[in-house]
Image 1 (cartoon, rainbow, N blue to C red):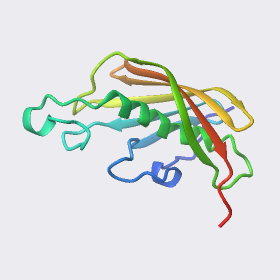
Image 2 (cartoon, rainbow, N blue to C red; image 1 turned 45 degrees about the vertical axis):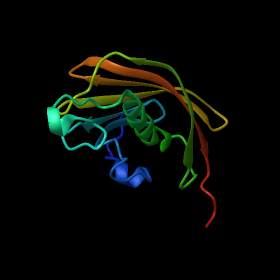
Image 3 (cartoon, rainbow, N blue to C red; image 1 turned 60 degrees about the vertical axis):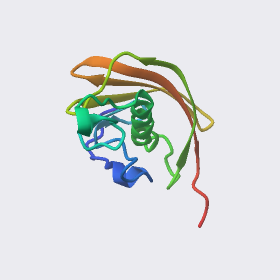
Length: 150
């Protein structure tokens, strides 16, 4: 499958809003296979404790995992054809590895790969990098269900 030429917007895909929207831009989607995005970490981030006072703050690793989970919505949007408004329910994480710190000024390059999709259960593998160096990796499990009728 060819990469998507349609630019997906996190605000259109996710119910998250400031301050908990942790994906700035979705840069590329390969339908049914993978998605790529970025998150720029700034000094003003609520989650970067101590950054304003000392400049020593770092982004918590579990929020980087949350960034990966949010990016997965771009991938999921290509899996549920004919189901307008599918909702992803995050079920769990496995094999989390935290290998470095993310500081204000860093740009997180996010990547999600589909490992398995069966009966609405998605298993994905996510990697977050800064300047090409892996800082977090995790296996995520999410269940997709049709949105309730309104």
